[in-house]
Image (tube, rainbow, N blue to C red; front, side, top):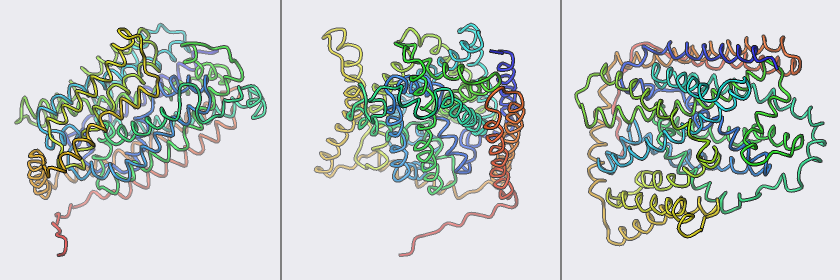
Length: 573
């Protein structure tokens, strides 16, 4: 393998991404523009960014490992994300936009009180840094193994690059690079898939060489109970995770917030089928992988069928998808720290310049924490164990109560803390103490059912009791007053700021257009250099080239003229 060509491809795309971050260095004038795109991000940009934020190299390593070992069930598991997004589009995304909050933490403070917010900020920051740090490990492992580079320096270097453009450019830098990453990753997989089928001898050669149960919807430890619990978990996660909520609050309306979730659902209906076939095909080629080696199945099929240059493109896509996921988490954790801790508790009178400085500094601080976590993942049992365990322990207790508060006027701050505390304690007991003290361990399915189901049952029990007593939480009454004041404040338009937000959004769309053109040119160049896959690479390049027209046309529709004053409307009696 000619490592130099692959290395050049990775470096060229990485330099281009860093350049994009630098382009947005001066567009973040205040917290709303830096963390929420001025609340005017186009819905299709938000939807693609949400999709990429959910993606990472861990998708290829963790789910690729499951696809290699158990087959189609890896696709079934990922379809639970589609169902979660559908429920979110119908009920949750518009509710988040209706709150008027910049972050989920801001809503928690206004609806459930400061003690709940402080507790949640601590847990959320810890969990986010841990999960996103853990998904940095697999991409460093992929790049290290493919290019014969040492793992630790590779992890540190990729992590530092990942932090840099988030700290510089804010939400728009993250979302523009999300789009570029989506295109690069999709291009790489669409090139990989036909080459993989060709290597195994087509569909017949593939199906004859895999186990009889390989296409079962359920397989191994991934039972109907696990899948059902994962559906509920992903309703909570996609509808309530703070990184996801930011995509619903950064668009211009409730209708657009719904469209963000609809687009995510559509992409997760189709994409798992495309993403998961390569490691499934590798099972037919080499069925001998065991243990943690199964996490390398995706990399092995890439190295087997992709020529120099295209392998570099695939590695670039995998790294970019990981950086998209981690950068979104960084942006949100930084937003929470800056908006809800520094501004909310430490320095309420901070200037916009001070807040942006704190935002960028906190991005570096939390990003370095992610790098530290990535370096210790191998000792924790591998990426599959780490990600699924953290999800089972923290998902339900952390996400369910705020989602419940979107609809309930009875939930109080003290009940929220009790539900979260009981849920986390029970989950930690069964995950850590029960195996040590009782020699008892829950199955993967039961672990997820208990982790998600217990908080929901506790919330339902309290809701029914409070309804029978006709109790309305005093925090809810305070929240209504705060919400009304925010509505009044929103009517006071800063015309200069509104025009600047439109300029920023038009500029973002123009940069996306340029990024797609750049990617198309790179793919055309690679198509002339590859020893195989020339035609399919050229076809993908052509599709990318024509797709550049979408953001270009959208940018032309953004008018940067005079902003009309907002007129308050009242419902007719």
